[in-house]
Each structure stands twice: as C-alpha cells, then as structure tokens.
Length: 129
Image (tube, rainbow, N blue to C red; front, side, top):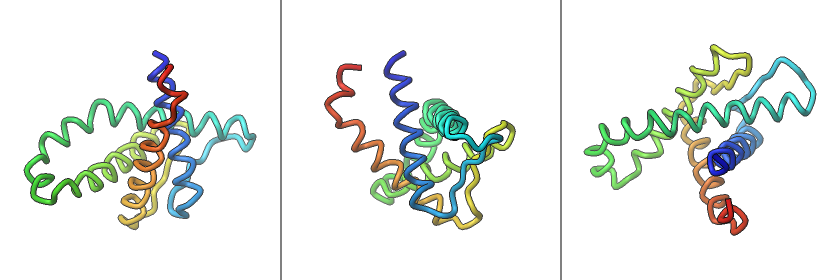
C-alpha cells in the first residue's frame, strides 16, 4: 500500500514538473487554493498510475512488433497515448487534465515524466517504503 502511495506522489510530482515546463499541459481544479491544486495533481497522478497499471501493459504487448522495429522508441508514443487517455478520463471528473492538440506536447511530457520517475525511483529514501 505504501509503495502505491509513493508511486502516486511520484506521478503527481512528475506531472507538476511537466506542466511547469510545457505550456500545453494544464491541470485545472474548482478551487484556487494551494491545497486544492495539490489534491488535483495527486488525483491526476492516481488516474495516470491506474492507466499505467491496467491499460499500458495490454497496449505494450499488442504493439510489441513495432516497438521491436523501432528499437524501443515506440514506448514514448505509448506513454504519450497514456497521457491522452488520462486526459480523456479526467474530463469526466472535477479535476481536468488538458493537453493541447499538438501531439509533440504529449511526447515531450511523456519524456519528462519518464525522466522524473526514473530519477525518483533511484532515491535511496524510497527503498524503505
């Protein structure tokens, strides 16, 4: 359970950094307080974590031939697709995660989120969780 909570926090942090760097990403909440913004990022991090846990393995398995042909670069496109799926799911909730129509924004966001998650997974404090 603790590992799942840590993963949600890492996803929220990665999404916050991606939204800070890229202008085409936005997470909007109903309130403007800092607490509601943090809860919004955590909620979107939860949705993104669930999408990565349940949908991404199926898509990765089905796209294995093209992933092998592109020497693994197609996984960036899969990650961008998972971001678009998270955006679509969040459109039915109170917290909205929006990506502009420019596809490269989602690709760059997927790269940023992957890098932040990779760095966070190597932190020694997370080994105890």
